[in-house]
Amino acid sequence: MLIKPTGVNERIISIDVMRGFALLGIFVVNMLFFHTPYIYINPYTWYQNPSDYETFKMIDIFVQGSVYPLFSMLFGYGLAMQFMKSEANGGAFSKFAVRRLTVLLLIGCIHAFLIWAGDILITYALAGFVLILMIRLKPIWLLLISIFLFLIPNGLLNGLIYLGSLIEPDAMTIYTGIQEIESSVLAYGQGSWGDIFGQRLNDWLYMSGNGAILIVMFITIIPFLLLGAAAAKWRLIERARELKVFWIVTIVIAFAIGTAIKWIPYQRGADMFTMNIQDTFGGPLQAIAYAGVIAMVCSIPIAAKILSPISKVGRMSMTIYLMQSIIATTIFYSYGFGLYGKIDISTGTLMAVGIYVLQIVFAEIWFMKLKQGPVEILWRKLTYSNSLSKKDEKELNL
Image 1 (spheres, rainbow, N blue to C red):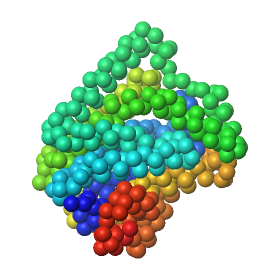
Image 2 (cartoon, one colour):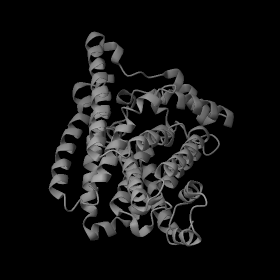
Image 3 (cartoon, rainbow, N blue to C red):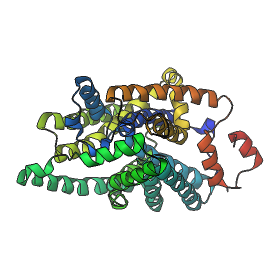
Image 4 (cartoon, rainbow, N blue to C red):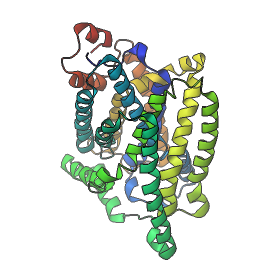
């Protein structure tokens, strides 16, 4: 039997709402990178204006490091749902998944090298290939492997960083690259397309650790994909109302511990150790709490209806994500309005929220006519090739 895209009536609204909210958080965080050379600064000392510092602090504690694990878990959750649907229908999941992830990888490469260096799609695609090798495992094994991959390497790494902070405290100071900052401002704010391309490539190599992301993703992204896949097999989101005690306990514990960890740089002082602990352990715990809150809220029919506009954004998540990059780079780069390095963090955050609101309106209008976002239509056409019947294409508006 053939594998078909998920129809509107088959969708789980809470998952789409989670994606929608995650996209807002991702945009708020990414906006820091869009309008300033954020990757080359020490954010804990860079912002001198009290308003900017407090805005950064709130983003750092409640958003930064918390939304990408949520989106990663949802990616694994969605891939596992496709696998279970394929198994039920007798479809060839592996062939379908490889084709789907290959197209995602190509889209990610276009995004990373021609639009914005902070792309995450490449990493998701590569991590997805690893997940499909283990997707047939029982959920308990997916969970145990996830915990093993995450806790042991990250625990050892952070232990070494902590020892380093005791032996050589100055070496743990967060680096601010003045030369890199000047180069970024010059290229993005005033440079030609070629200058921007060169700077974008340098930024991507820097953020990916010159290819080290291929190894690092095994202890950062892949554990969250495996966790999401395990949750999908246990149907933890769909059964939120039935599992309300589990979710309430999980939300309270995960949010309390996660937020306490996220405060550490502001209590102990910001250095490589506290910053790494904050994002490595605090962020994922908050992500689990956020997922639980949304799952519980969406189990209430009236709440699910109210959050329907957010779910539409989640349904076209790739379109929204790429659109955010195109809009932001047009605003800040020299080939657009050239505002790079010229606005403060508070203004940038308000712009992110404002653009996101417009994207909600766009999604509402789009879904009045079609049932898939524009990039999703292209992705699904390339993924499913000629396997869909005319009836399927009509139902899905492909």
